Image 1: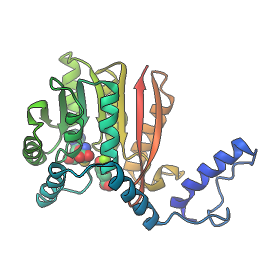
Image 2: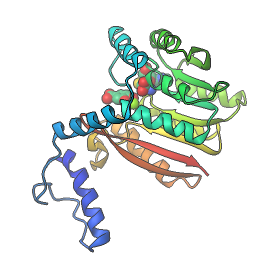
Image 3: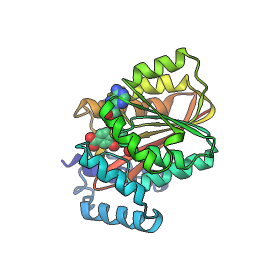
Length: 257
Ligand code: SAH
Ligand code: DHB
Ligand code: MG
């Protein structure tokens, strides 16, 4: 059974079960449901269509990805349309103070900073000093370096230090570092939030890995636990959005009550 194909089937079945009263059959294959598997070329086509139509060309961000790649760092920055979504979300919330967990080359950081007013600030946490060097160069070149502070170290420890120091709460938080740490980061981020803080998480669908009864790896286990937390924590109101790239991933939006 192709588990990775079941996700869209379940969405359809859930929809039907509400509108037509059809009973949910989570254990049948997409073929048994008489549906087509999700085609990779279709995902890429739709994703490219959205990027072309809605995401303006951006020399600084293109150079960011080139330099990140040239430094031998992984190509795991958020997609252009995800960046666009976050940029708009930050503007909508009127955020001034943004916290990011997982900097890489500063691609997402650039968009977060650009969405802020001139006196806004991004604090971004990164494990690897060599990533900080690349990110710093990219952020300075994009003209947002003065608004961004990069703190190097294990995010869990940096967040603990921030809580202990009584750091001013953040208006917007983006969690995008090691997936195993997400649940712990959420707990810490809650202590650096106020009513109205928006918390976004990346990589929360993992091409359907979250549907499997037993998570196939510890990253899937980490994000599955995070999804359950944000869905059920009474202090939050949350949603998870599927994100189309070459594969299907997901991004959550939570608001602290
Ligand atoms: N937000 C970036 C991508 C981040 S990739 C963008 O979209 O452009 C994930 C980053 O998290 C990597 O740079 C990795 O080194 C960092 N990371 C991994 N484990 C970490 C930890 N324990 N603490 C802080 N950063 C970590
Ligand atoms: C991967 C993707 C990400 O967006 C990320 O933040 C970390 C890892 C990955 O595909 O391995
Ligand atoms: Mg990510």
